[in-house]
Image 1 (tube, rainbow, N blue to C red):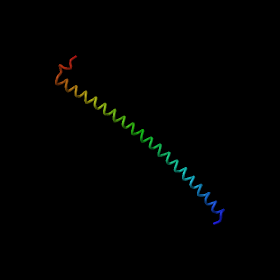
Image 2: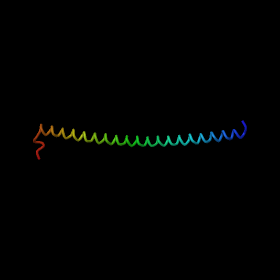
Image 3: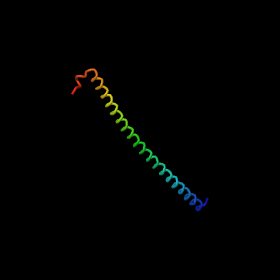
Image 4: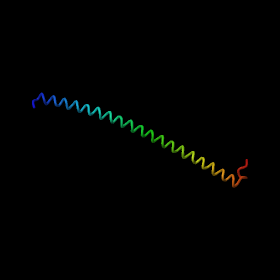
Length: 78
């Protein structure tokens, strides 16, 4: 190979490397977005679970008070 051919081959390789870098950056950005969306979904899921737990506990407390009111009605008369 002569010097001109080597330079042409080097330029072609540089173009291919740059194209691969662009593809890599695009895929990395997509992964970042997906990771952010996953974190948001996880946060929402935790919030929903906390709301569910609080609501469930409220209902259990109501049921407990109703049962106590049936067994000791005089304690609950205003």
